[in-house]
Image: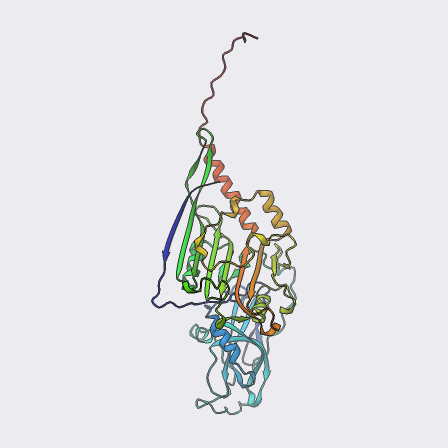
Length: 445
């Protein structure tokens, strides 16, 4: 039941137009692996349970991809590590140096440690992250004790370490989950490129501002009720709420025809219709690439599996995957509840051009309960376009992908709260007095 619609727009310009596209695989909040912090002598030290989560800002996906393409594992040595996350979900990242050139790699990586010559700690099975080693060092997170960088200031091989120096032990496998360590079944566990389900409008604004996208739009609506005495919709006092926040960097006007082969990025976040207490209940994140900047399909699929889990490997990922987070914290895959149509599909790179009707005001309590029971507390979908679909799998290039997240449980809570506000407002309206018939016998029967 919606009445007045208000739209607020403003464009954010930053001098020269710079398209900053970040991949979705930043805060790994689903299916996280556990790891312990290492010490110089190889012992393990578990951080205290009440320690605050350690985080870093994410960098550009382009730098990460460039580093992935140019790395030669045989020439790399570990110069330090840092841990991110909070117990029991802590991930370890390694900072590397090229033993041939003496130049440190920009982004930290995940991988398996291997012993190298002269006490150097090597690494294999490298996966480049979006976290900067410089940021980790600046925040005091980088641990270099026990590592032999493998190069001197001039780039020559470093001397062998002292006999007592040992490379840090590899991360131990995560311990089995006990009943006391129940998995996180909150929709807020779902993160799409930095925007989490359940965030407030202010939290979403802060994330989108950090993306430095060129255009920004907010759509507001007002809760209304039907005034039966007048037969018209009446707005509720203080009933205005934030419906959608969108931010995007549109493709160049000259490329408008190349729908799936242009650079651009967009976010669209929908909130629950609860004035002053809105929560993000749906997220749509789309990224477009020109042919020169396209990413490999295998890299996209590997990142999806790493972040959302549910599949044994990227080879098991279907064309349009769906993940369903259950209230118990487990992740199921596949669209058995047939709800991809809510937000699935490739999204627009100009997210602010149309307004969506609020989901929480469209469904009934029974529909939301069915979604939660059959789907879960949150649903994530992914769709992408491959420019050269006929190529070998390792050579396929993605020029557009969209990741969506929707929480029927958050939508249900918002719908219930909005209904209570509407009921309270409509109940306060005095009904017109109905004249009573005269108490006399009928005539002319």
